[in-house]
Length: 142
Image 1 (cartoon, helix red, strand yellow):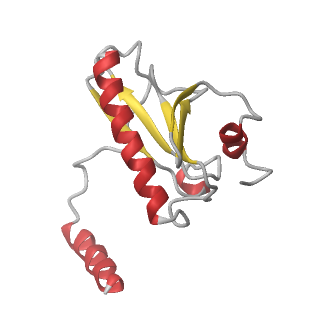
Image 2: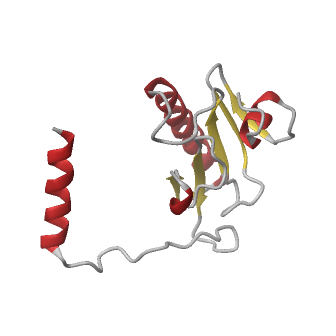
């Protein structure tokens, strides 16, 4: 745990939250600035700064908890879908540096859903650039 981390404080109970689910490894709680009705966060109890740092076991546990909660949220709230979102690093919109997954139920009724897509899928047709980046990443993974 980190003494300076907001989410570590939530996990330990020193900072109040609306708890949704908890197990030995994960803690899920409602987001206080929700993008949609039912928007919540799932975090590992053990502090990890971000996606690049989290141990595989904790990442697996958080992802499985998020899936279980997402299934329940879709059914319970009548959501039309769900987004899982992770932001890794300040330039990727991470504001709390404790790994977390946002579980964001999505609705046809936009009074329940304030999230908008930050890019336009399908607008890039630069296949050479896409191929070059893919090849570069593939080679670096070998």
